Image 1 (tube, rainbow, N blue to C red):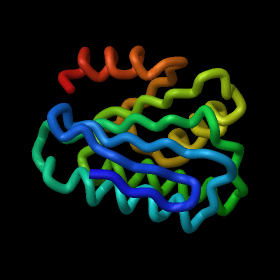
Image 2 (image 1 turned 90 degrees about the vertical axis):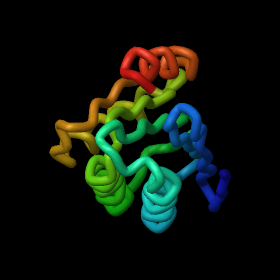
Image 3 (image 1 turned 60 degrees about the vertical axis):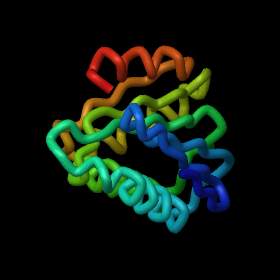
Image 4 (image 1 turned 120 degrees about the horizontal axis):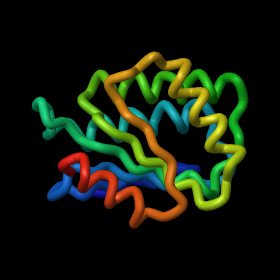
Length: 133
């Protein structure tokens, strides 16, 4: 399953219960709302205690406006409410976006979802494997 809209592409790996997204450029609030709605829709078949995990490729994203930041806080809240257990951010060398992403997580008050940052997808996938996904 795969979908694209403006700044984002979203796809799944149903055998491993992973939803992925790749963003580029500046993400606008309506695109971020579409993003988390699509992630939740793709993960809807995994509504049990095990849940799912999310890998976000953020290395090509730019920082967002305050309105966009509010949508990213809602992303964390919506994913946590839908059973997301872990989020791996693939940041490459985009430290600036990682700092902003970390702030969104803190603002969301979602301790049930663990977030980590990685330079490569292989590192993120290894972490998911350690977590049972």
